[in-house]
Picture (cartoon, one colour):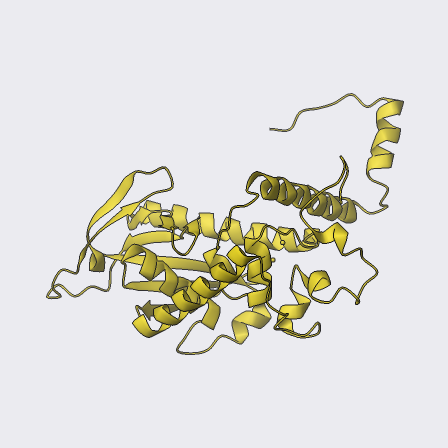
Amino acid sequence: MSTSRHLTKEDYWNLRDKYPEDKLNQMVFNYLSENNHNYSKQKSKEKEGEIKFYPSSIGKSDHDIVLQMLGYVGKPIRGEGLMIMENGTSFHNRMEDLFDKMGILIAPELSLKDEELHISGRSDAIIWNYMRDAEEPDGEEIELIDPRGRVIYKGPENYILLVEFKSISENGFDKLRKQKPKDEHEQQLQLYFHLTGITKGIVYYENKNNQKVQEYIVERDDEIIESIVKRIKRLVDLAEKGEVPEPDYDPGDFQGRFSNYLDLAYPNLNPVSFFDLFKEETDETELPF
């Protein structure tokens, strides 16, 4: 809950120094960007020396994934982008709350761990498998753990589904394929299958402009999983050696435009100090989507 505050003249000028922008939206966006960037740097310090692969990064380039695993903090994410990401989180929470009220939610998220692949993360929602035929034999017994370490499901894998939520723009929504989700989202779900033992799930898209939805059923594909696991092992090996692969994108293509590490991949593009983009700091000041 917000609290009121007494504004003195000193407070006024202190706020003017802190927020020199002349538009409220720019004040908000710059605050969000700076706050998130400082948080990222702090987390990087806390996890220094820890190599970690994030399943949500699977659609990124090899170059950017290795930098992320090594703990480098790239350029600050723009406040506008952070607001968009927050909307996606709200969509996620809204759907989980709805599934819970419907009585089909088994768990809002799962704990995902794999020491060999350096994975420690969380999945999206687990729901009742409404598609299972009554005559279908029980699948393999699995046990699923929530982020607090509690067992939240123990039983046949084909009694449940894994749902991955994605909030996308109208332009992206209109470009979705008829039969399959976006490759990186299918790969993310396949990796979750590998980590949990679940064999079927749904990628559930919402058009953030008008709340239209599109869903895709995804079934376990061992060939895709093998390829994903092989790639992660290769990237983990590079990170452990401290070797960063050459940029596998151009500055003007999709991955380049949205890369958090473009200035590291192409340091001559902008007059930004290469040293400033590293996670190490030399003083109390300063030297991601």
